[in-house]
Length: 623
Image (tube, rainbow, N blue to C red):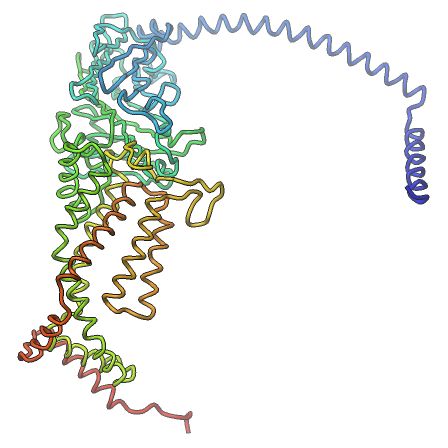
């Protein structure tokens, strides 16, 4: 430490000593401070004493208010108030597919476990639990007009479990005058169905006649079941169906709430591979509301809610028939359900694509897939056989496309001559090119049409595999779940547009696509910009499909390999010399033009004539 530093620290020390000496309290100030502290101590003592006394008063008030609340409750909901206290107990109904827990508090289904399935982490698959769900009715009592608290909420009361068997139970709420409300649950023989009835008996005098209808509220925060929260969130949303209409879904991208102005047949809380659905056979008779919002709870997907109205005409006895479906989004299972409603369309909650893409999946892909699924255990082999089946159907189109491409390659030298001859004049080039195609018996569109016809199948499978329940948690080669991406290497960091892992099936698909592009370029003789676009697209798919279902990328890889084999066989059977001879023979025949071709050529010639006689542009400005 040098001399200047020592001097600096010494000055700082002296300044601090001087500051504390200058600001120190005098003896008189110290005496005043002590008196103030003594006074504060006395105040704190009195405050503690007052708090103790107030606590005793609050206790007395609480006891009195409890008695008052009980009396008020009896006035508002009548004899039902006798079941406002009790112990919450759980009754379990169980078959090979479901374990349904029904809580006596509220008489409701508090949780559902699917016995045959697991979450991606191996734990039991619970669709919803008591903590994250609600199911209750609201009924306006006869005192509702004069009392703002005249509403009976079924989840605030304790129900009695009666008529309990191994697969059914009745939850009863009595009004003390011979009337009651029953919630009746029975496991259906169709495994994933729970038959449910709400019965009102002799309670018409308890109900406010100005608004006797029941409001049903159903809410559930759905837990994460799959490996990737992102994909599960994108594929989780409420759906509903109105009679004689197609099911409608809410947006999956942002919170939404929608009012249903007609009678809904069913309302569903759908996740990626499972759903919880309330089916109304004759219960919901008025408008309803469905919606969802985000949840910040860990490992939870979305908070879904539905509100429904049940019409009540103050009958002596009224029964509402419903059922629940708790199970997988499996197309065949949902389609074959017998829920007592014709054309329930529950299978349409499985997204198979719109229009022709959905038709391809429903009428071709799914039947073949189901047939193979009943015969073969390995999903990877099933996809391989499905690919061979599809490629066999498309083989005639592939053959025609190859022949057309080969003919275009043979004509390419002549097309280049035409291009140089007209020095970039596109109209003249098109007229002469079409004349050459016609003489040679070649259609430039014949190579495109087979590709276009294959597109519906390509896009249909792109929609099918990520939503195929059959692939869920099915292992093949190095992947343990063909419904998820097959990560063989976790990078530990994120690459924009690619991700933080390496999917081997996607990598194999990309490499095989690049090889296919190269071979196709050799066949067609394509050059220039189009050649490099063909090489660019596989890298786009590498990023897009890196976190898609490995079943999809396995299909694309196998499809490329089958295409290689088909083209190798076609190249061995097709002789370029014979194609030359066919083109030469076609040139000898008189050209027959269709009406469309004649009109097209006439229009092109007229455009060329107008261009040739057009006056030259004026030079200079105004004179």
